[in-house]
Amino acid sequence: MKLINKITAGRIWRSIFRTGLPSTNYRRSLVILNNFFLHLHPAKVKKSSIKFTTTFYLGGLSFALFLILTVTGIFLMFYYHPAVPLAYRDMKDLEFVVSNGKLLRNLHRWSAHAMVVTASLHMLRVFFTRAFHPPREFNWVIGVFLLLITLLLSYTGYLLPWDQLAYWGVSVGTNMIKAMPVVGDKIRFLLLGGNITGENALLRFYVLHCVILPLVLSVLVGVHFWRIRKDGGLQAESAGRLSEKTDLILGEKTNPRKDESLVHSNSIRSK
Ligand code: HEM
Image (cartoon, rainbow, N blue to C red; front, side, top):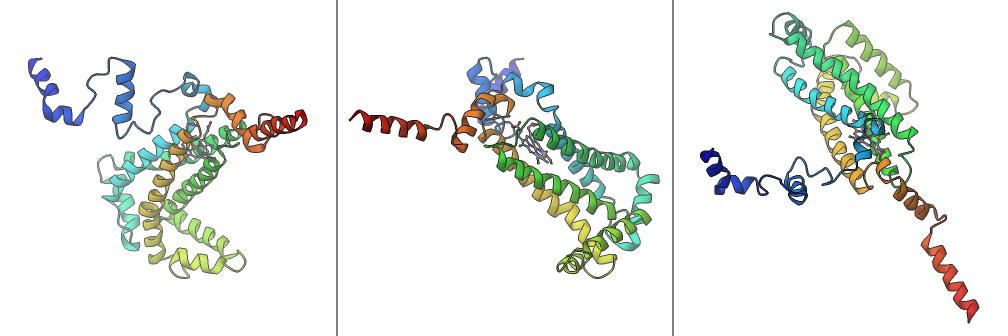
């Protein structure tokens, strides 16, 4: 115990953990504000916004699944080569040779399916609670891109096992893109790196799936969370303030400029 006290009172410890044990509300707030991982949260959270029925935790679940996908995806990259002669063999090795490989692959697969479901349900929750209204309309647009990238991640991952399902799934999908007027052909060429679903397509889908799309999603998720704070927390938390802000933006009821002009015209009349 003496040793622990000595360590926690030492200069090295205090240079990392500045607030000490949080015994008061003020110190508890400091712990949140001074922590790199926690400072995205507000120091205080309303009970209503952590109630299960407010959000059904669908946004948080989507994020948790994204983290699981990132971790399992990195482990999968240790065993997978994005090359036509190797890709299918690597998937079979994962299933029958690598210890817990099947578990790893299925964790990645099922989390991907689940993320599509939770992100879609999250969008419905936001829609039916009218949380897309001002001032949250920009976050709604970011959300639309998040869902789009989630779907693109699923689609690009689909080709990687290089089995019959993957090959024909991507062939049909990219032929559908080809049917688009004017730009269809060009987008298909860009996606496949040629005119057929082959080596180049596999490499492009791999880079999109493992690097570009996860990076874009991470940045957008950061902006999404930051906007929630800047928009005054969750919609349920600020229902009163929300209608005030909405009225201000739409120029109804409590528009101060209207009130100002009322005062102004009254003062003219009284003169
Ligand atoms: C990768 C997908 C997504 C993640 C990880 C994510 C994450 C979150 C989280 C954690 C919250 C706060 C808690 C909650 O409402 O559950 C939230 C709120 C919100 N999300 Fe998302 N989201 C995603 C996709 C979307 C989509 C597809 C939309 C709509 C098109 C959207 C629009 C919003 C809005 C407007 C809020 C604020 C809700 C409010 O104030 O009540 N998000 N998001």
